[in-house]
Amino acid sequence: MLGWGMVMGGQIIVARRVGEGAYEAVGRVVEHLLFTLGAFAFLIILVAYTFHPALFSIAVRSNFVCNSASSFFGYRLFGLPFAFLTYSLNAFLIGITRTKVITLTSFITVSVNIVLDYGSIFGNFGLPAMGIRGAALASVITEICGATFLLAYISRMNVGKCKLFKFSSFSKRLLKSILDISWPLMLQFSLSIFVWFVFFLIIEKVSEIPLAASNIVRSIYIILMIPIWGYASATNSFVSQHIGNGKSDQVVMLVVKVMVITLGSVLALLVLILLLGDSIIKIYPHDEHIIKATLPVIRVIAVAALTMASAFISFNGVSGTGSTKVSFAIEVFTLTIYLGWAYFIAIALGKSLNLVWTSEVLYGILVTVISIICKIQVTNATFVFVNNWFFTNIGLL
Image (cartoon, rainbow, N blue to C red; front, top):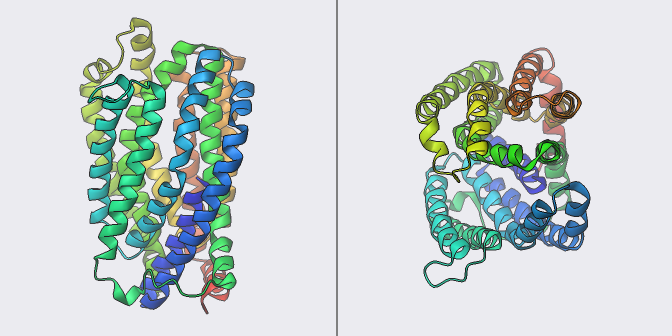
């Protein structure tokens, strides 16, 4: 999430440059992302690999869960440099609105991951049965394959006007400008994933069955979130491009249109999941207690996905203007309420798992309402200030 936050800041700048027609500046932004995130990845690996056993032993009550998590993490961590490389290249493609190859890359990586998971977890295809460590190793190899394919594909694209991979001199000024936009996003995304980690720790404190059910729910929830993430990322770039083109008055209408499309896409997925809920659960281990705990939560995440659709689109509409400090403040406020609600329901009141998951619905509603209010202010009364600040900081690079 730290890397993703920096990449999103770079993507905002790339999209702004494209909107201005300054394509020759795009390559330098991407180069600085690659240089900085490469060093950053190795630093994180060094620190996290050293301290993760102590972290899990402190955070998790169940020894079985603790040992499994630590075993997985020890392997999974080494995919970070390749994940950061993929993020940086995706930022370039989204910023120039050439995103079809991202879909192709995703299809390739998912296919490779499924095959390697089946082989390395269970010992098929002549591979050793490594269990959860095999899942982590498969993910690392998959990220290497995805990053390599994306790098090779972009190298053959006709993007010479962007001066990509020219690797000119390193600019502290450009890096500072990227970080000025990125640091609130880096903190914001890191805080988001940390809070979700704490959310699952709260559930783990209840017992292992709610934790197992929540992990099943999470996998279904992520499927619902995929179109939301895609549209949200596009919203971020389109808003920045509109501002670069001098069309700031069209930003609110653009966000509304994308929100309607996103809600329609999520609703179509919801219908399928609600109709096939029982069949989907049967894919997972046939534990009657886990299934009983899972089914009510699926109905909760169906509502949560709709609120998340509006939340992510409106939220990225704010960050796409360059107002990343505003988006960070929104995230801190809403996540505090989110986590407090989850703790109150699960630990203080000891209520059922489906009520604990209503914190997702609450979060989506809060983010949507606050983001819409902030976006109206940013794109109208205070837009001139934000726009002048943005160009003062990065406009001369």
